Amino acid sequence: MTYASPDPARDGAAQTSEPSAPRRGLGCALEIVETLVLTLVIYLLIHNFIAQPFEVEQNSMVPTINEGEYVLIDKVSPRFSDYQRGDIVVFNPPTGYSEGGVPFIKRVIGLPGDTVRLENGHVLVTPPGGSAVRLDEPYINADIRGNPEATLPRDAAGTSQWTVPTGSYFVMGDNRTVSQDSRVFGPITRDLIIGRAWLRYFPLNKIGIVQRPAYSGLPSTLATPTPSGGALLPLGQLTGR
Image (tube, rainbow, N blue to C red; front, side, top):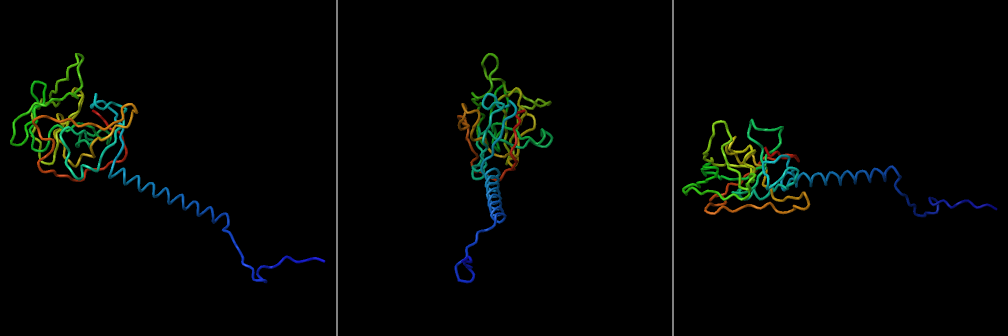
């Protein structure tokens, strides 16, 4: 005698079904795409509004920051407070000085309203309503005798004095003999600045916060901060010329 297999549809037994392999594969693919999109969105938010990594390509900030080192640029704090004297900032060069769209990295020397003057190889800054103060700059690159290099005019006219306009900053590289900076193109406007160098994260033996010096006799910030959004750039490299 033979017996037929029971028919679940006839005797009311519950039926179970699993999604086919193609449907399972499509679901996995959608999950992967969603994860990638979310990761990209988070990356772009961080990259454009919080912090951005850069590789320093040239040597205008030697010995403070050397060619081939990597720094993290802080884009958050400048939106709520002004840049300070001594900050190292990354910015888009003024029109006519761009090198393939690569940003520059320099140190803020003069704040809005300051008068910056070069005298006998030294930098003197006169704040609004104040007296001239000669800067003590131990971070400047040293000459072959171990003395700080002289800070001399760099443009064809030999300009040695500037008044920093409202909303602008006077910047110079620490390697004064080679740096193309405000001695060449004048003070830069705030909207050109991408952010301040906050952390050096490569090479590993030099990881640390980028320090800002204090200048005796001079205010470090404006009396009335004027924060505003700066220009944003994609991941790139820095030039130090």
